[in-house]
Length: 312
Image (tube, rainbow, N blue to C red):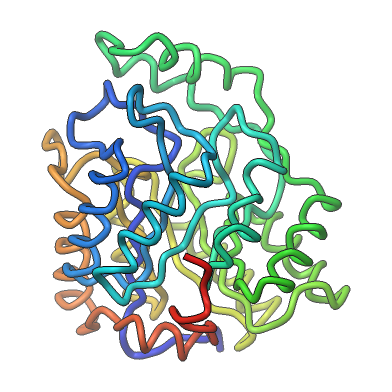
C-alpha cells in the first residue's frame, strides 16, 4: 500500500510563478505580504509552506536569494511549519538560478520538477481585461514557445545537491511519465526511498485536472513504489478543491494556495491563502474524518532533518 497516515498533510503555495498581480489584488507580492500569508496559512492548518518570491515593485517572479532568505526566515520565526522553497522558479530563470536556493538555505524540503514539458500559460491572457505591468502579458504570451527544462542530467545534479545539503526533494509530477522518471532514479540508486510525490494537474502541457487521471496517477505510484512512496495533489484552477477532496478521501494529501488557484468558490476570489487552507481542512474532516497533520507529524512521516538544521 502507498504510504499514508491518519491525518492529512496540508501544504499551501502562497504566490507562485503562474498568476500575475493583475489577476487578483489578493496575490501577495512583497516579502512582508508573503510572510504574513505564510504565517496565517500555517495557523489555519498548513504544515508545509511552499514559497516563491517576486520583485517587490512589479510582482514579477524572481530568483533573488536575499528575498528567499527574508521570506523563509520570516515564516520560520513565527511558526514551526516546514518552509519549502521552489526550485521551479519562473519562466525566465535558468536551471542553475532555480536550484541555487538549496545550497543557499539548506531547507528541510524543496520542490523538484520531474521532467521537461511544454508549460503553456498563454491561454490565461484571455481572462485579464487590463495588465498593470508591462512584463505580465509578454511573460504569459512567451509560453506559447516555451519548454520548461528538467533534463535527466539536471535532475541527477539536483538530487546530488539535495543529498549534499540534507534537503528532501518533493517530486513535482506534471504527467504520468514523470512518475516513471522518479522510478528510474530510484532504480539507479540516485534517489533514496521513501519518496514524496506531488501531482500537479491542470497545467496546459501536462496531465489534465480530471478525477480519472488522478486515479491513474495514484495507481501508478502504488504499482511502481508501494509503501516506498506517499503523494499529494495540486488541482490547478477550479479543480483545486474537487481533486483535493478526492485525494483526501483516498488517504493521500493536498496542496492549496494562490499559486495554483485564485478562487475560493465559483466567481469569488480568495482573499487570502488561509481561506483556502481553512476550506480544505473543513472538507477533509467532512469527507474523510481527517484532521490536518502537525509539522512535527509531517517531519516524522517524511524523515525531515528539522527546523534547527536549516540555514535561514
